[in-house]
Image (cartoon, rainbow, N blue to C red):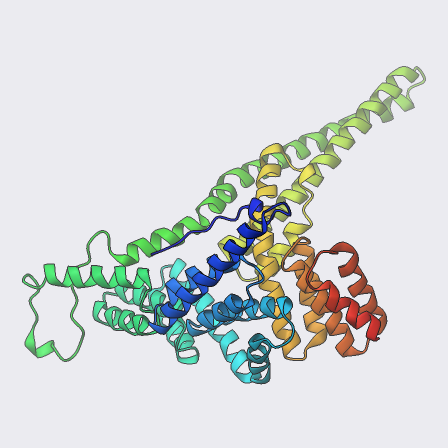
Length: 448
């Protein structure tokens, strides 16, 4: 049973009847109880779904945030676990198990570094999979799983890579291990059922040489709708939109702009020669010179505008290259994207850039905020402040902007830089007066 809760601003209206609010909170608690029973049965996927709906209904249900963090921790999603424990701690700062969970994570810095390394290996394996190098992806995924054995996403991708390499028996083994961690994982169940069905259908037609039976796992034919084909379709879809723009729209616009610039520069040179000739002539007509000068300035302005358009288009090209095509440094892509002046671009690129900022910057803001929070927990306060500033530049409304300012102020406090701490907390109080973090910020200001 899956319950999908749509966020509706009407349910948090100040004019709602108190009885309706109580019913909403009661439903949130019921979903929390159902999720707890799902976790006891080992069904982490269903529990995570129920708990996400519970916190949508009642964002102050800190018990749901705590249990959701534990569920994410059980499937190896450590950053998401930390995020919900932080939210829980913000909702209730005292007598809250989230404080204990975060302290355990903070005290075990070596384990936290291991988790970060496992996510790096997983991201690298995704790049290899997109490039069609399933063997290299398998190597990195094995390392990620050895560091983080409960990493469900890594085990699922490893199973798909085994299918791509024709090692269905290894894929079945990984899927069975995954289901021991998360018995309700629907993709794993679907892939396992498909592999079992294919093996049954082909068992009569597959001939196995007994002399080679102990040397290699059995290989069966894969149908056209094998799980790895579905995986490849998903990966292809991630970059399809960006590739269409990059390979078709951006190069043609750059070519047109360069052509216009060349034409304008040639026209300017000709006008300059003509102006010089008129100035040298005794019969120069002042009106002609003024007219030519005006035309020269107009063409120079057009040239300058085209150069600006070309520069902004090149920035957009770099964003697409760094974020989609060769995602070596997505933070760099975000820094470029946030500084693009879309008003200079053509109409089609302006609309595309606004869409990119709306969809990409919030994701990058949360990723960079989590990196900053991890650096804060490790005591690397200068590095944390740099991450918080970058996250805030990407997204200045709601989460994680408020949290970035709050922990930036805490980092300055840890460094003993009281003037900058005061400046940061005052900015939080002035810009986000309704934030749940404002009381804590005021506390630190009054204390110091």
